Image (tube, one colour):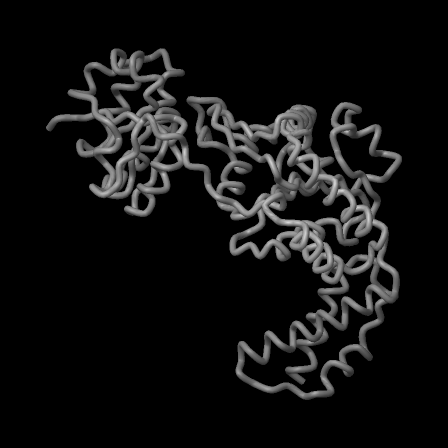
Amino acid sequence: MERTLYTYNRSQFYQYRDILSLEGKKIISISKFMLNQNEDMFDIDTDESIVDVSAAITYTDVLYFEHVFHKLPENTIFIVDDKHLEKLSYEMRNCFDKEDNINKLLPEAIEIKKSDTVVKKKRKLITDLNNEEIESLISNFNSKLYGHEKFKEDFANKLREFMIFNKLGEHKVLSLFLMGDSGVGKTEVARVIHKCLSSQNKLAKINFGNYSSQDALNSLIGSPRGYIGSDGGELFNRVEESDIGLILIDEFEKSNSAVFNYFLDVLENGKLVNSLAEEIDVNGFIIVFTSNISKDDFPRRISPELRSRFNYKGIFNELKKEDKLKFVHFRINDIISKYEKAYDIKLSTNLHNDLIGVINVNSFKNMRDLNSEINKKFVKFITQ
């Protein structure tokens, strides 16, 4: 059986990946087999999997590559970045019989030429909006975010400023650094922007509370070529899946200096770059950084260079009583409406007021705890 090595152009990788995905195929890296001794790993479904051998360029042991190669099913499809073809085609000369273009793997109606420019995934950006739409978004944002009136005013001004200077090519990313205790509404800023931009997909969110500080950067942008995980990293995956220009970086203080330096470069150049040297243009994006550190800790934990790159730095405090009450009224109405629709039932007209009467907002500093109390009381009332 002839074995063919198919080549692709790096700048168009995501096009190929998306098209092949529609055909029910996924691309996996050869590194997952090179560094794994589990024999079951080699038993792949060749109707669904395509193996990218580009990462093999980092290996000097050609015999080991051949050993791995021959363990994979005979009808496995192999692809390679054409920039590595000259070196790899010789190193793998005993593995492949011929070379061809990846277009041969695509449906007949689709062909991507090398001369084509990469088709960027179209995301809705704040900079796509006209002045009227921006003012409408600001109004919508203000109505959905409870409290934090000073921040709302500052955010509106920063947004208008960003629209002008992004157009002039002087301001690529609008970055907000929000500090304060947990549960006071910092992450809610990104969620409300997400809703106001009418996203249909998940918010692109990275939480550094889930990382070990030592491996944070590798988890974020992928490990160097040749290692397991060298497929782009979580940040790339989350942004690729998003349909708007918004990223939430939560608990940023739990990352390390390598990550700080990475985001310094992102804010300066307006590009995400992963370990495979692939890029995502984030010109026109909003990036919201949140942290539980205090105002006094801020200069001690964040480098001067990075601090200067944040366009807005603000403290979020506990909501006032009237703002908590507004949230409770909204949340109760929201739950009742969703419940009635989901269960096709009409609840008591007194339920809203009954719930308001048993929830003491003064007992809660954390809005997550307050929301949990609302949920608990609601369940109790409808099941008693």
